[in-house]
Amino acid sequence: MCKSDNIYLPHLATIEAIVDETPDVRTLRLVFQDEAVRESFSFRAGQFAEYSAFGSGESTFCIASAPTRKGYIECCFRSVGRVTEALRRLEVGDTMGVRGPYGNSFPIEQFYGKNLVFIAGGIALPPLRTVIWNCLDLRDKFGDITIVYGARSEADLVYKHELAEWQERSDVRLVKCVDPGGNGPDFDGKVGFVPTVLEEAAPSAENTIALVCGPPIMIKFTLPVLERLGFADDAIYTTLENRMKCGVGKCGRCNVGNVYVCKDGPVFTAREVKAMSQEF
Image (cartoon, rainbow, N blue to C red; front, side, top):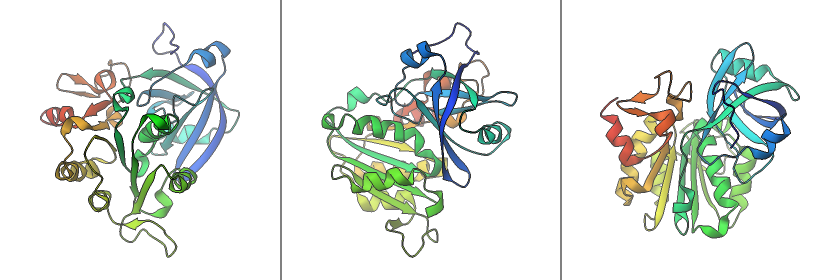
C-alpha cells in the first residue's frame, strides 16, 4: 500500500488499455506514473479506490483486478453521470487520478480449504471478479468453485471473454443466465433470474462460503435462497460499495446508524447486513 500524507491527493495513473464490456460499461487498466508508487502499491480483494477525471470530480469503484496480478490495477464502471461520462471520454495514454486503497476486504485466508460460491448480477460482477481471480491464482488452496452470474440480457453480461475462459476450465463451475426475454437463439446459458437459477443449481452449503453482489432486489431474493440451501449468515459475504462517496468517512453519505460503509466495510457478512438493515 502506498498513500500520500494528503488523503485527498490522488496518484497519477496512465490509462494503458480500455475494454468496452457493454455499450455503457467500460474497463480501464491503469498504471501508476510514479515508479515508487507502482512498485509499492498493494491492496486486498474487496478494497476500493477513488478515480478522478480532472476538472470533473471523482467516483468510487472497487479495484476490479486481482491483487495477485502486479503492475497495474483495473476499474470497471457504467456511464451514469458527469464524472463517469468524463472518465469515458478519456483515451489510452491519458492521465487520471487514483487514491486509495480504502476499506476492508474479503478475508480470503479464512476461506482456505473451503468451497466457494460466487453470485453476481449485472455490473456487480467486478467486485467479485477481483476475488475470483485472486482465488483462481491460488487455486490449490480452495475446494470447488462455482460462479452464478446473470444480467438482463446477453449484451449486459460483462467480462464476456473471461466468462468464456471460466466456462472452459475444468476446475470451475460457471452458471450464467439472463432474464426471460434477454436471450438470443444461440445463448448457451440459463434463462431466468439469478435467485431462481441459483436455487436450481443448488450448490452445497457444507464447508462452503457464498459471496454475493448485485442490485438490492437481487440480494433481497438471493439471501432467502441461500438460507434454504443451508448457508449460515456468517458464511455469506457481500459488499455495499454503491453507498460510498468520499471514501474516508468525512462526508457521511455512507453511514448506516453507527456504521460507516467506507471505513467499516464495504465487505460485510449477511449477519452484519441484517443488523444494519434495521437502520435503513
